[in-house]
Length: 122
Image (cartoon, rainbow, N blue to C red; front, side):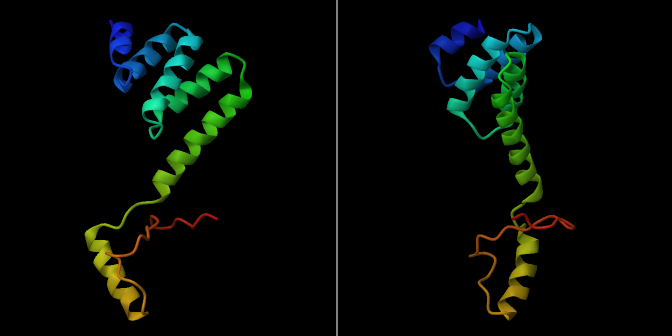
């Protein structure tokens, strides 16, 4: 049923994800890799396909693709966890502090805050 759905609607990430899950349970890594590519063509900004890509690549003996997928997943998750957009309450506090120093206010800046205790990267 899912394969027919994918044939009709080639932009259905939910079907691709479910096919990846079922194929991984059957250890059909070629099918997993094919559906990962399809999913990433529709939406490359989510984590699950990178996990499946890493597992499929490792199982198929493509270690370099597995490493790239794991790194992409790690960097993506790490960046999301370390960066957050100012909430309106934090924004007003930061805006008041920065305006005293002559900086732009938070509402007009594109600055992002780090969680408490986090060090800036790079």
